[in-house]
Image (cartoon, rainbow, N blue to C red; front, side, top):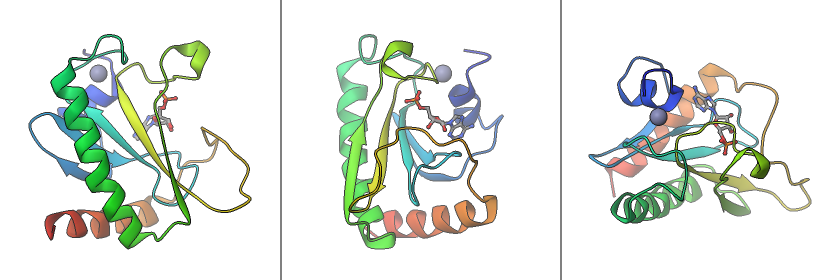
Length: 138
Ligand code: AMP
Ligand code: ZN
């Protein structure tokens, strides 16, 4: 998919604060984080959504989501962690390449799925480096 932003990240044609990568899956920080550590776990193959994705890729995303969740718990120490995945514009999907959100949550925080402000690039880079180190040491 030439114009898909996540495919561009996968092909290294667009920048991202990567935290993990293997043959099937890539994980990087959301560039508009709702909370510190908001991470996306993405299939390497371009599938629009859950309905298109193959089960091997879905299983790989779930397994890596758990690994990244452990790293987030160690590095960010959130009170809670929300996992969600949107299918179709009506559900709020904005990037039409299958991905799962891992979103650290704090007690009493209003529930938002998207943010309007981009994250501070320096802060995102530092956090991604810590998460990468944590995932390497597992
Ligand atoms: P969704 O609404 O579930 O499709 O989520 C798409 C997410 O991708 C949003 O939270 C966006 O902030 C995020 N996003 C869009 N472009 C990029 C990008 N270039 N790098 C990282 N995250 C992105
Ligand atoms: Zn794509």
